[in-house]
Image (cartoon, rainbow over all chains, first blue to last red; front, side, top):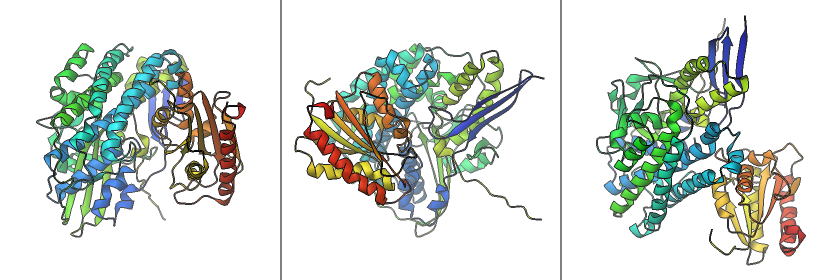
Length: 429
Length: 161
């Protein structure tokens, strides 16, 4: 009997600390474990006893990459629980800030983390020596996203300007104006980026995934919508817990999230693209088609193209929002807390980020539940490896390991976000 | 690239709420009071892309950051980025996005390092949440500040080369 093990103790070019273990016996995969061994973070417990108004800033500290997603999911949860609607322009500004977040995060992943896999480099630094123009373009694209974030959020990382009810401070139209030329340059560069990613070599690999994303009747959903899938799911955010459940798995500190009825599902750019292709701007749709993508893409390796399409869309959308912007009279509306269960869900760069809080009549948080995108994708990551490894079994060990890591990076996993509360069982005789 | 470079820049790096990780920021604040007027002093988090952006037009850059290599707390090293690669301990205390060491190496690969780039790494002892440097690191701050001032005084000759 011949057995082989693929083991990667520290996954490179992912956010946080994770590991991979694949066991092969007699040319059959017998075990796959995507392990998230970063310690649990206990954020849900920290939130208990805190005021509702603190939820956005506390939870945004969960992640240095998708901070805005946490701010927005938390704010939205509280606003919907307290029956508050934010001003139309405040809503637009949140969407604009979220575009900045997508750009920051996607540009980093496409150019510095994922592209080296396709071009055969250990990391972006090695890649930069041979393809300086590619890395340079990535950094420039990211930079304009950073500027958008700094202007709206107060700073590029861990923005501080979002509150339940709106913002602390909103920009004047004049303050946004200097961004326009930069955004136009970036939109052109992003279009080139889509073309470039389409030239990368892609393994022939598809699965029949269930793609779950927010869907909104009027826009490519980012900050709100219903939870919709390609296999018939169509629910309000408040019904999330009726359909999804988190399971504790012994080898990982991140709970695995599954659909109660159908198991594994897929969230993130590829899911959004497949659920909402018709809502992309004409420019983004055309760029996707020119890059060889149809309205549906089931090859997770092509998520690098889809991420660039989303970068392009985010720049296009940012320009539209700035063009239509009129400064609201007040940066925020008054909020009166009441006893309620609060549900929020927005599209973080890596997929849906769900928050649920129980709040008392004074606005004190009684309990909290946060489900990050990476914990929702863990099962799909493992399922990809179960299918992928047998197809590429004959590759030399180093190359097979490389391919497996690349398959994980398709999901742009954010491990720190997903490391979760670990249940402790004590057995006594 | 805009023409005309903008002189000497000191950048203190770190997170001020992580005890000794703040040492770069604290050194930068003291240098702000004592450095000649034409020298710009910045405090930054350790986000690589922002760092590359902030130094792109400078003739000479001095970076000050905490490191965690297992050496004795308060020991500091002065590295000339043009003469040697930046050791990985400069990655340790940064955000997960992309680190100081990676920013320097990426800048090197792209041919975009400032003409002169000196890096001070001060060994920290405590990196837990909270304010205030540990005594060993506090002592090092003064020494690093004096060294940087000496670098600035010799600006055009070999200390900053």
